[in-house]
Structures are given as structure tokens and as C-alpha cells.
Length: 140
Image (tube, helix red, strand yellow):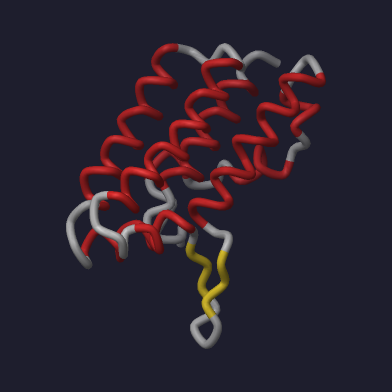
């Protein structure tokens, strides 16, 4: 069974996350961009381990506690992943999906309590990185 944050065609694509940035890109600069996108997604979705329940959340879920400002800052950070995808020459379709996910995250995340819970459960930034990794792997 796939984790809650992994739905549909994204399920089972963890093998790309295990590949080094160098194996998915052609230049050292591109590898740095992919690593940066991975780090930002980790910060936003998984950086903090909740004690007792042993579940990981990120800054995105915690930022939602501060109405409007927190979700706006989290969305700006999420755009770093999209920017790196753009710099890595991701397909327009991939970029459009990534922007859709950032927009959905901002929209749903701005709903009090429900948005915070969904931010903690649905890892859209991680999903964006998987989209980027898949886009890069298709070039092989």
C-alpha cells in the first residue's frame, strides 16, 4: 500500500530518488540544481520528526500556523523547486504540473486546520521533485 502522500502514477517511483543527482544530470551545475531542489523539498515536507508519533513534517505544515504569511512563504520556497526544474530545462508540461501543485498547496494550505493537516500528509513538494526526476530520467 502506498503512503498517503503517494498517489497514482507517483507510487513506486522512489528508485529515482535513490539515484544520485549526477546520474540524472549531465553537468555538475545541473547536479547541484537537482540536489538543491531535493533539499528544499525535504525542508518543506519532511525536515522535522515529530516525537511520539514518529511522523515527519516539514516547514510547510508548520508555517501554516501563521495565517497567510506562513503559507505565502512556504509557497515561495516551493517555487525554488520549480525554478530549479526550469533551469534544468524540464518540459513545459512538467513545469505546469509543478506550478499546479504549488498553487494547490497554497490554496488548500490557507484553509485553517484542514490545510495544515493536508500539508503534513500530502507531500506536494516531494511530488514535484519526483516529477522533475522522472523528467530528467526520460533523457537517458
